Amino acid sequence: MKKILFCLLIGTSFISQSCINDNEDPVAVAPSDGARVDPDVGGATQPNQVWFDLSANAEILTKRTDWDLAFYSGSAFKVVLNSSIMMAAGKIPDATNIDMVTESNLTSLKNQVQVANFNPANEIYIDDVNGNFPAGYTAIGEIKANDAENAVYLVNMGKEIYTGSVPTGSVATGGDSRGWMKVQIVRTTDGGYKVKYAELGATTHKELTIAKNTAYNYSFVSLKNNKEVFIQPEKKKWDICFTVFTNIIAGAGSYIYADFVTTNNVAGVGAYEVLVTSGSGVEAYNNFKTSDIDQSKFVYNDQRVIGANWRNPVGTNGLEVYGDRFYIIKDPEGFYFKLRFTRLTNTAGERGRPQFEYKPL
Image (cartoon, rainbow, N blue to C red; front, side, top):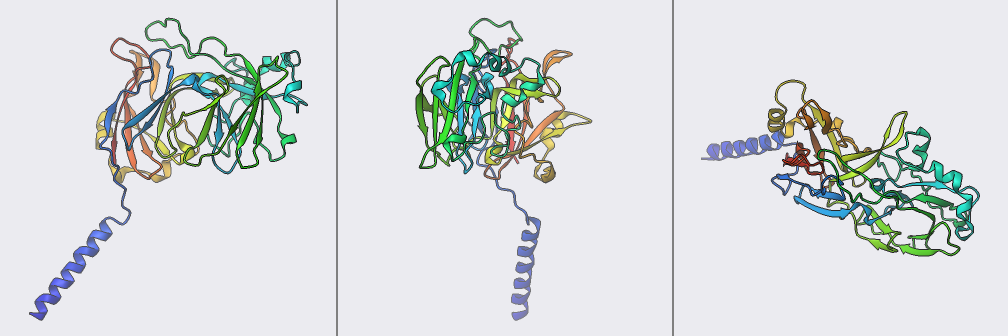
């Protein structure tokens, strides 16, 4: 009897140890089963930014013109422009008093602080397109503790959302000019931001105070509407965003992309692209499993891993989704997903009606 019990104990120990060895590096199981999703980008003028949480299978919509500036919530004091509406900013030379700046002093600078005019020199007037903040470059310099060190900036407020008709298959990423403002930002004594802003011809200015909220990547402000606004979900509650985007073309400066998808790299989202070199892209996607994940390929310092790489606006069959690629995403909670795009337009051929599917790994 003792021999039987001893053998049972040894066998149980062996089985338990085998299970541990088979799962030495377990992958967290996402709460979502995946889905096929039609993000509400809004059609050919692409008015919406769509913030999507893969774990929750949930989206938050905001209009691209709802905000102007984003104030970083971490320990650094960084301010980011709204790339989706083609904003830009340039330091006004020798200006320290915002009320003393007049439009007559700014003619030359206004000609420079432009977006998408095929001038490589204009890259300094937009933020780091990698979105690698707070380390990345921002057109508005880091806000210093000494108020006197914080410059006054000429801010190109970008473009309104286009309101006219758009031919089928085309896009219109911007409408009328939203004008210009002069802006100066300082720190508050309690660790937040104070933004001073005015129209170029004004001799007085308005002010808004913005507190940091570490549950979010940023706090957002609409200078046009004189208030703080809700834009992004909490930093761990979104993974990808559908948006119009100001990007860089090497040798040609800034350029505007429709159908763009960014990742939430500020909160730690990583992603990489899988290119299928032979066979069916759909089959490769369906067969991809947890053990196929290559940790060395994840990119955490560039929000453009997906970008516009998923679609071909000049394909041999017209507007096309590339069928030879899909994406692996690691969210802020450590869950893994595979994602592929299935549509660029709706059945009527209208842009801004994408579709994707994803599954947890």
